[in-house]
Amino acid sequence: MQTAPAVRIALGEDLGLPHGEIVTGKMAAALRKLGFNSVLDTDFTADLTEPLHTHYVDRKEEVQRFNKPLHY
Image 1: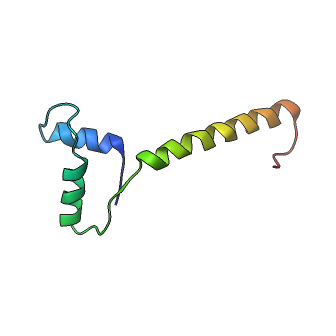
Image 2: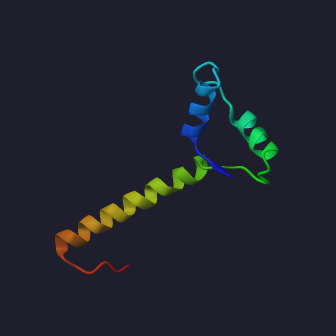
């Protein structure tokens, strides 16, 4: 199971926990009890995705400006 920060925040609020309370461990434990063998967090991978997206957008704009094929 893969989880994201927004899910953890919404889950805590829906369970009536104080705003901003950390529920990562509680959520992972509940998912394991439901039968998921592993629970992965997307914090780290989300941090990697943004620079790649920015790089792609920059190259796309450069190609459009110079009307060149998109080759690296």
